[in-house]
Length: 131
Ligand SMILES: [Zn+2]
Ligand SMILES: [Zn+2]
Image 1 (tube, rainbow, N blue to C red):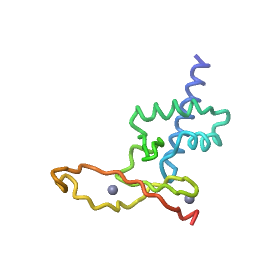
Image 2: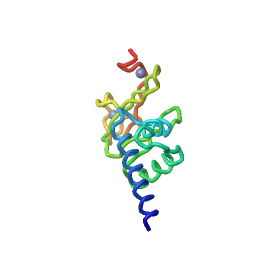
Image 3: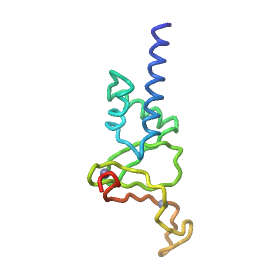
Image 4: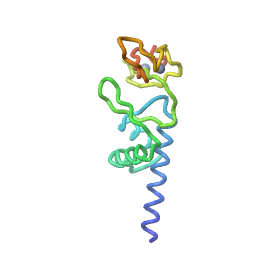
């Protein structure tokens, strides 16, 4: 049906735009941030659509949720390798950091028999744009 196929095209375009916004970001984004950035290319976009699309892309393995120590949930590409996050306390932007600053001997017992398999790190401070 023509109407159905137009709707399908619109959904695909929305999904592609949202995936692109997340891919182009300097770090993981909240749903309101994804909504705000996608709105520029998708007039009439609703935030419920962004929530639904983010869920779909996560289930498809394209996105992964980042849950910060504050409990805030953000989304980033599932294709990124191991990296840390930097939360700017001035502008509240969360950036990906390129360098792993932690030298943990993984898969070795380092402390009373605890075997570390992975780690996550969120740094806090002031980003170059706010410094
Ligand atoms: Zn900043
Ligand atoms: Zn690391």
